[in-house]
Length: 135
Image 1 (cartoon, rainbow, N blue to C red):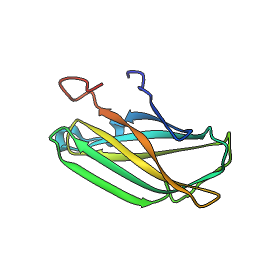
Image 2 (cartoon, helix red, strand yellow):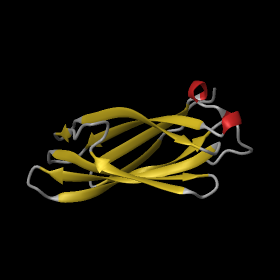
Image 3 (cartoon, rainbow, N blue to C red):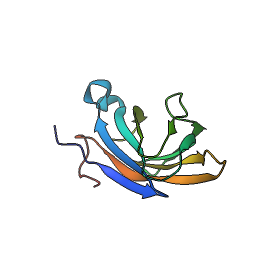
């Protein structure tokens, strides 16, 4: 297995780091079913406490089909991050193709009620069942 690649982006002192993993044991390439997990770390490097309110993902398969996912929080939580704190979670996504790309945003809110968007870096979903690597 190849070492996972880490993607990171900082917006308004919030750093998002993503590490995707191909899940061979949950995938059925002969059925056109490929599954990835991704581990996300959200770090508050700012001076204010923030809360993650919503998420918006754009998941694009290697044929260019786009699926958008919107919702409150992540994994059923709306974590509050005081300055210097971080929150980590792991989630996953299936695709009908052996590769794809995910990117998105989190809507954050300060304890003073100011809302702002944080960029989730685009990251590639690579499986061993494709001709070439995306990243």
